Length: 458
Image 1 (spheres, one colour):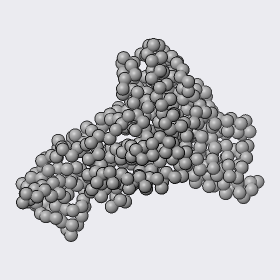
Image 2 (cartoon, rainbow, N blue to C red):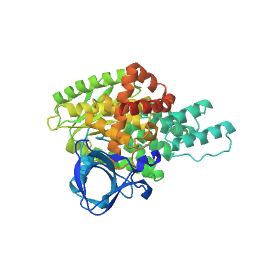
Image 3 (tube, rainbow, N blue to C red):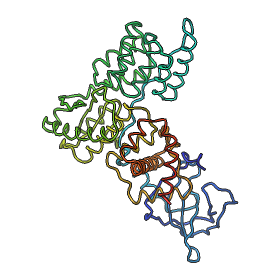
Image 4 (cartoon, rainbow, N blue to C red):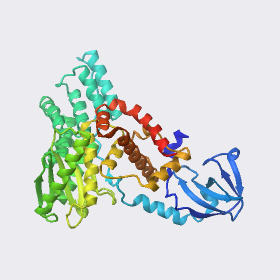
């Protein structure tokens, strides 16, 4: 059943929101969704009324968990969607809920550093270096930039090797540490002038530093030598952002630079935002411990300007792609939503620069440190999913979530938030910082945390 989790996560509703459904024909009531006749609990007659508990989404034959009363006893089981009527209002609420902005999933996914895996030439290279390069490419495909750096350090890979520079540069860019990437890539370009991969990666690094003119210059030079869809996509994004810039202003915090639309955000409002963001930066850096080799660019726009320049989803109010992008209300005030959005994105920035962590920890930390607390109805939802045997392990949520449907993603975010709340309850700030500084411990800690979570959800 656990293997089926990603295909059949619960799209949960609040426990009290039981919907009346009517059986439209003689219907088998099943012990599990998709079960065969051997798992049949009963047969419901046409016209029998049941109460909707929650939906199972993502399977080919969508099921609903229902309850009904028989001889004064309340029982539960599953029916197929095709066998009941009265679902329209419920399905509409699910669609509305999945498209509404909600704290914890309001940000867009960060930009992906392009894979420009070098074609390794064995001539003139010692065997240990060749083996290391091949292992580093495997780590690149697995999105393990930390492992790339470890592998190359273990063999003292020469900095003047073009392929070493490409792999190291990509690793630092994946962790949004552009200054360290440039320190590798620029000397390599002097040795290999006109190399399209080095040029494109340098352009990517300048983009992360919010140096868009230099980004365009290097991306154009790279594309003039060889077409690369990733570099072309970034070039278009930079051009779209540049076209929407008007009346730009700047303000400075101790560890970040704020760029804002001067016509929409007066200077006094910008200074107020700097003060608010400075407080959040200090708070989160203390609780996590961040790496600060680069000043963090923060781009602030009105909601209309934000959507025009980034092309993100309508529900998004902020995202991190090496820079934090934030949409502010027409007043320009740092209201609660803006503060929480900034805190959420700064946690992603902090963790990205610090190391490589599983997605459940990234999202759970971002929600927890931006102020999310699991509600009682949210806890009941997770408990219901656990009792149905569908609650995943945290290690199952370590990878990407892009393949999850909207309802499944809602549950994944909820579980990640609850997991980090539990982690802080058990280990406090010092223990969590220690875990973040020892990422090799996280998979085993996740298994232990799974036990704690299930005990709390009984």
